[in-house]
Length: 294
Image (cartoon, rainbow, N blue to C red; front, side, top):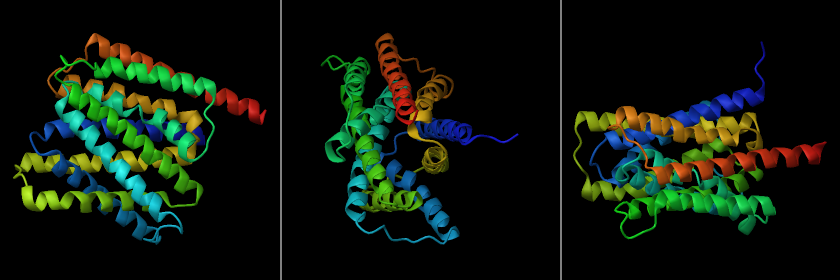
């Protein structure tokens, strides 16, 4: 029986969510290694895989004309997003909290697309963004008594950075840029930015820690390539909501593999609000598309 492209897209985006939840677990399991060192190995593995993919397909290692400034912007914003996410994942008591803050990125992609790509944000989408932001406050808990306030804000900043990065990716995709080259450029940029830290402040690792940081890279690369494939098979409006399964996968792995992590009640309220807004936007976008094409 033939499998539709939409089904393939859903399978790929679920796989990417699973990979990224595995990455979150390995970030924690790798222990007290400094964040820049974890980020370096995360991108080193992706660099090798992206390079091999470009060579295998005999594709160019040069950007499409006019895309270099956007690659630099995408890589800078993306690296900020990775640092924020890694720091939050390491320092917060619940990896699921860090995951849901990172999942604010689709809402910020809408904001940045409106600001810089002049894509119109409809009133209902704006309402969803505002309510999702309120939901993030339940997870961040912005009070001085919250000992995890700084990691929470870092996780939120990671979502902002990721949203900006995805906006650049979208713009370059419209210009015909190769997705594999985008992964290659970002990985190379990130390795070059974090390599000086390793030269002067390398933290010795046990064999077990080395295995975990390499698995961070494997999971990150798997997540990047499967999410790219997902949006190749089907448009965002049909499959993006399934990316929120990452929060479920991360919560399950946090409970079973990271010391029975259980988010608090306010975090669950935030999860519910953000995921509800994501589903609402998913349904709204599909209806708008059907009206437009019907």
